[in-house]
Image 1 (spheres, rainbow, N blue to C red):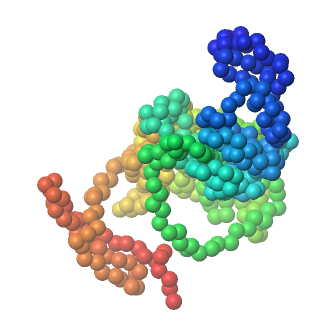
Image 2: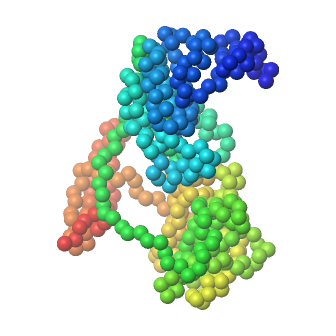
Image 3: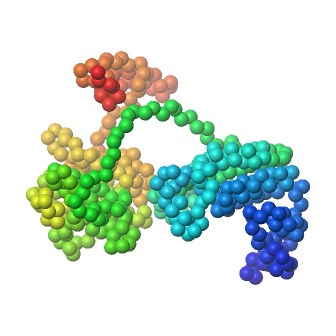
Length: 449
């Protein structure tokens, strides 16, 4: 392009051997990196001085080469340049589901990722560079890089570019890419990833609590419609599970799911079927990250959810279904969508939250907690949604609970620890006294003999 050529001062030297473009201080070479003798000749033609500080940048390059050739290239760079720095960015962690999908993608393109088997993680890549002649090397995955080495104002700028909340995918992707810096002969030393912004790890020991067995469910019919995520499943009656919403595969396309799905367990097997809409003109609004709470034999309440991060605040919706169903024929399930008037309590305009059924003084409530909204990326509030009136009540719990200067009594039969009293003087800010006893259930962590 003429505009780009002007920026680098085109000297008209392109087409001379391996030099495909020549500028005043920029040259573009076309050469096979695995042929080191040819590479050396090309760099010599371009006038490269290997006695001055040189930076090598490889952005997802070496992994497409056979390991013996990429290893040789790394070692060649360390041996032939007296002052050199190397910046490497590519994939890692081939062993988990994300890594397997990643490898399958590149294999289908006939560009398999060669380095992953021998160098599957940050530690292996760091050892690789030390063994090939580099004297300093630091490496981190892109989650750590973004958190620790990206200035906070830049993080905020990027996150404000457009509405976004699929952090699971973002963190998964970033955990499978690393950035590595290596150097030799540099004075002062060049270790940009060991900046003073890096937060040290203080992970405690990981203890194994036990193991559980997993098995594929036995089915008598093809379970179509379950290829989705961001959905919600609820037990609407014994052995009957209704699944709504989410993003997945429908009619051969990836989209926000419109169809409901039902699983019915009969004679030890799961049967699957699509749900019939009682009022097909009433459209399910394709929400994700919502909750569904079954409140009776024929009624469930949908709370919150969103279609996209820029279209949120979907409120609440009733789902009505038959009180009885034929377990041998899952296609008997019908669902009627009923809008609420008014559409929703403001507290329901959220997603990625939780709802839990609780009984208080004989009245049924849904405990609505957390999530996020269009205005707040993290919500720490909670409401008690009355299931008949659909109105919210805020319960204020005494806080904070100061866990020192108290007395405690262990109740062996109940496997509980009762904390009594407690508190203390909070410097010149006042004195706190815990107002009531607190029960800690220990049943999950005690081993019965």
